[in-house]
Image 1 (cartoon, rainbow, N blue to C red):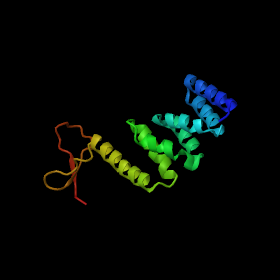
Image 2: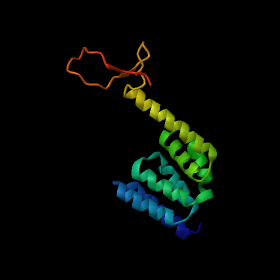
Image 3: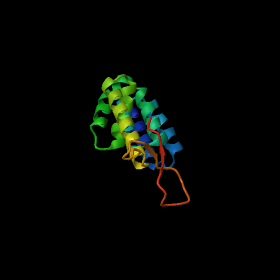
Image 4: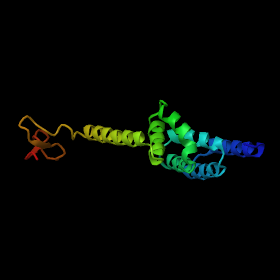
Length: 151
């Protein structure tokens, strides 16, 4: 990377540190990606601990580097940040890594189960083996949940 490229990427990193809104981040991420420099991969990878439009823009930017992004993504999946790990796997999976595809599938199942548990849907079987609808609202707070025949 020549000194002009270094100056450009430094200026973009500085601008990135001053971004306040998603739109500003997304625009700056696109400009970082457009530099096509190895440093851009590191900067984009550092954003994978984000969520929403920022993470999506960083993921798309990293995908545009193809195999050149693989080492940085392997470092991301070994990090301690849950979002960075997941997003690293997203990039690896979209670049064809079968282990990351399996990891994402298992993570999706775990997330769905955690959501259902949080919402109280995992305790839907009562002692009779009938499914219980715990979401049924009744005027009597002491009323038992309605039973539905087990499937």
